[in-house]
Every structure is written in C-alpha cells, then in structure tokens.
View 1 (cartoon, one colour):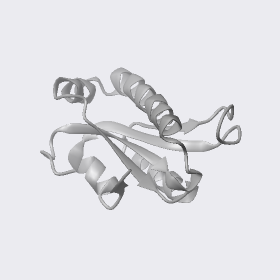
View 2: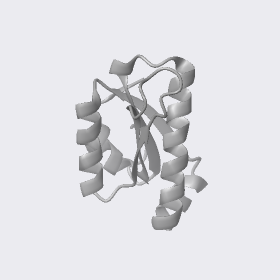
View 3: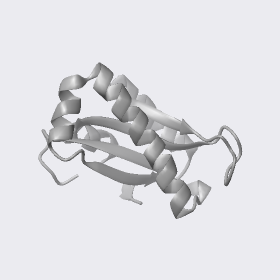
Length: 122
C-alpha cells in the first residue's frame, strides 16, 4: 500500500470475472464501503476514528473469481478485520444473489498488506 503501516485504510475488492460496467462497479464498491464503515464505527471505534481523521483512505483492487474473493474474506475474518461482501439484487447486470465486491476494514495498512499485498489495482 506504500503508506505508513500504522495508518488505516479500507480495501474494496472487485471480482474481475463479472466484467461489471464502471458504474456498476462504483455502486457495488459504495455498498461495501458504507457497510464496512457502519460496522467499523460500531465495533472498532478507535480504528474507525483513526481512519477517518487521516482521510478515510480506500483502495480498489481486483481478484479473478469468487473463490479468491471468499478466500480473502476468510483470512480477514480470522484476523478480526471488518468484512462485508456485497450480494447484488440482480436488477441490472448480474443474476440475483451474485457476490460482487468484498470490503475489508478500515484497519491498519500492515494488516491489509498481509491480506491484499499481491493484488492489482482495478
């Protein structure tokens, strides 16, 4: 992430196999960010405030498929990091129930690096 490892960031991880439009991707990332923010504010208030006071940094990354997305969610859950996976309503580009984006954090950059360090930006 190339920032201070003690600063906090949020990662939004998009499935590239779905070939979502730019608009759909933005909306799905927004859903993940809002839910992660809500969960972090409630359960991890100190980390949330540190993240918020330092610019609420977010990064958007990609994975190849659903299996990789779920693998990252499992790793983050075991590390006690806030996660939220977006399940689409299926009204536009994908089938109802399709898992599209995984939100992680906010959490310290060093934690995100350990989980997402090998992923490419979208």
